[in-house]
Image 1 (spheres, rainbow, N blue to C red):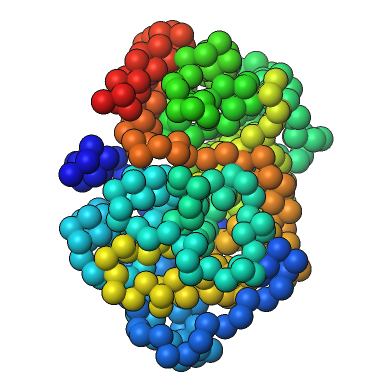
Image 2: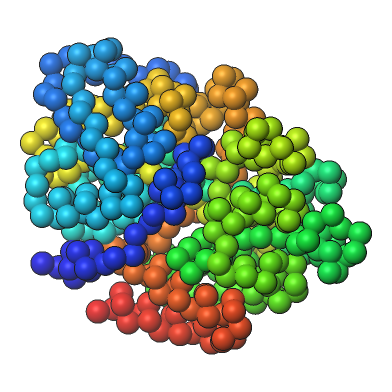
Amino acid sequence: MNKYVARLIGLTVISSLMVSCASPGGAPGETGGADGTAQEVPDEGLSPITVWIWEGPEGQALSEAALAYTEETGNEVSVELLARQTATDTISTAIIGGATSPDLFETGSDRIPSYAAGGFIEPFEAYLDDDYGLSEFSSGVLDEMSWDEQIYMLPTDIATQLLFYRTDLLSEPPRDYDAYLEAARDLTQSLNPESETKYGLAVTAAPNTTERNWLSVLWSFGGDILDEDGNVIVNSPEAVESLEYWVGLSEAGVMPPDIATYEYPQILTGLQEGVVGMASQWNAAAPTLFSEEESPQIYDKIAIAPNPEGPAGAFVYAYALGLSINANSENKEGAAAFAEWVTSQDGGLVYTKAGGNNPRASILADDGMVAERPWNPTLQEALATSKGTVRHPEGLEINAIMRTHLSQALVGEVEPQEALDAMAEEIEALIGE
C-alpha cells in the first residue's frame, strides 16, 4: 500500500461544503463538441450500470437524466442515492476496498489526484468520442477533471465563488482590490454612518473552508501553493502580501466580528437581511438571492460580478463535481457511455434543466438556461479565469494544513508571515515523505 492510499483511507477531512454548493439550488447541508455539435447517442445493448451519488439536487438531477438516457438508448442505469453527509466515506470505502459496485460514482474534483494515484479510478481517454468537446470546458475545469495529463472525471456541476453586491448601494462592482476595500468601508455603518448595511463585506472564512476565499486573493497577488515543479511556494513574498491583505479586511472592521465562523448559510442570510452590502459567495446562492419569494428585501437589488483584480490579475476559485469510473467495475464501457452522455451538450442540458449546473460553455450560454439563470454569462466569464483545488495526491491534507494556519492568522493568533512559514514547513514535510 503506497503512502497516498494509506493517507486516503485514514483521512477524515471531507469536502462536504463544496458538495452542498455546486448545484444552483443546493441548500446548505445538502453542493457537444467544440462547435456545439450534439453528441451521438451510445449504442444500445450495453449492460446495466450502477451509479452512486448523494441525495439532494445533484442526485435528483442525475436520476431524471438517467431515466431520459434509458428511454433514449435502452441502456439501463440504476442511480442509488446515498446519505449526503456520509456519501463520500461510503464511496471511498467501496472503491478502495476493491468492490465492483458502483460502476460509476459522483465525486469532488479535489479527490481525483488521490483516487487516480491510488489506481482506484479509470481514465476516460479510451472511451471518449472525438466529438465530446473538451474545449468547451475552461482550463480551470479541465485541470479539475484531470491528473497526470489524463482525464479521470467528467464534470456534472461547478461551484465557484463570485462577488454578489447591492446595485442600489454600489453603481458598479469594485474592479480591483483597492476599490474592493474602499467599497467595503463605504458600506460599513461604523465607518460610514450613512450606510444602509451594517457591514460592507462577508467572505468564506469558517475553519473547515478557510482557504477557499483566500486562494482567489493569493492567485491575484501572484502567489500559489506549489509551483509547476511541485515545490512549495506558499510563503513567497506574493503569498505573504495576499494574506496580509486578506487578514487586513477583518482588521479594517468591514466584516462581521465573527467572520471566522462564516460559511454559505451565514453569508446567504447576511445578504438576504441587508446586513452586508457585498459578499464573496458560492454561485449556488444565486437562485435564492434572485428569488422574490425567498429574498424579498433584496432580490431586485442584487447583482453578480467576477472577482476584483490584484497585481497578477483576477481569479476565481472553482471546484467541480463529476462522475468517475470505478477501476474495479466489470462494466467500464457502460459506465463511460452514460458519463459521456450525461455531461455532453445534449445530456448535460437534460441534467442541468433538472437542477444541475454543468460548466460546458454551450450549456451555460443556452438561451433557455440564460433566461432561467440570468447570472450564467457572469459565471461563464468568471470561469475563464478560474483555478481550483491543489493538484497533488496529498491535496486533501494540504488543504487541512492550510486551514489550520489561515484560521490562526485570521483571528490574530499569528502574523501572516509566521502562518505561511509554518504552513510551508508542514506541507514540505508532508509531500517530501
